[in-house]
Amino acid sequence: MTSPAPAPSRPRDPFRAVAAGICALQALALLGFVGFYLWELTQDSAADATRVVMSALLILVFAVGIAALARGWLRGDNWPSTPTVVWNALLLPVGWSLVQGDRGLVGALVILIALVGILAAIRADTRDRDVAEE
Image 1 (cartoon, one colour):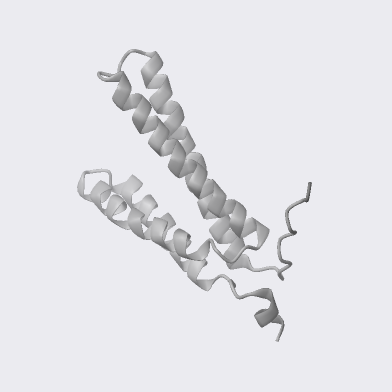
Image 2: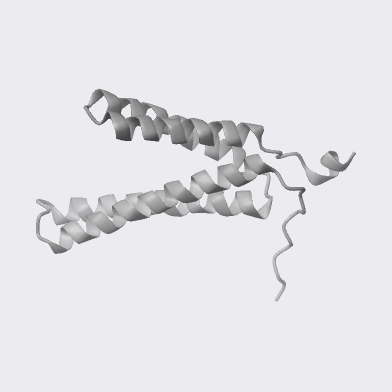
């Protein structure tokens, strides 16, 4: 049985740390929504139990994916940059919808976090280690 290859060693990059933190925060928030949906299911306040369960599972899939992004950032992998930018770009219209729907503070927070995530992912050093050393 072989162990996985060690992650590439990189010098400290604050943008990678911010991107990892943003992704971890988003994954935790989504896990909170999963918990809320499951709690709602136990309270019999859900009109359609199947819809609630499927929504919770879908949100859980996204939470696991975003947690994988955070882990990739922390490990020094090169691949999390594009998915992080795409995910956070998708959050911009969500935030704007919240602003327009009288949830201005929450919407502004979603937009701010998404913009910080995009900026961090773009600015993070994702060059191959061999290229970075030249």
